[in-house]
Image (cartoon, rainbow, N blue to C red; front, side, top):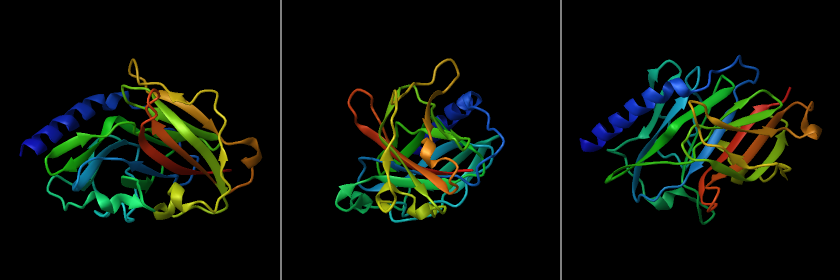
Length: 250
């Protein structure tokens, strides 16, 4: 009961922050997809929840091995504000060992398609449920897209760094359950050259942003550009999350 009361309080804070979210622009990209790995320490883990700011509710959710709860319960918290809950304080609960791939701990995994070009994650928008309560995630970024690249959006109170940023071209859209970096080694990946890899913290009611452009030689070819990067602590390089997303190239 105390866990649910605490979670409800967090949701009320998130609602208060909803006015800080950028406004979504007219869609120019068809159903961009995003998949995110989120490390955690609970064992067992009983679920997780994410608050997403988007004009329309996300659809077509990742339901692979590292999301044993299946599609989430989707609750509209306000205009353009959605709570996605996978499992919950009461479970079902699963051992931490389930969230490894090829002997490496990858963590929770969530992903979806969206019919708009902007997906913003509010403040500290993610909570992991364990048997002893909930723990906030950190370093969850959003993004917007216009075909020439993506704007990474940081709605949190701490700056984050984008490490191991890379890009590849896919001739066809990748299914959401296959949109993970480890499953895409067949693509021709190349590192992104960035003047700065730091996404500033949100300040004065505005989210921090960093632009990742599509390399010129990949523009105008059609298909889908796939971005991948680790969201990390700028000082320690501790990885908070790993993002793989795709956007359609005109």
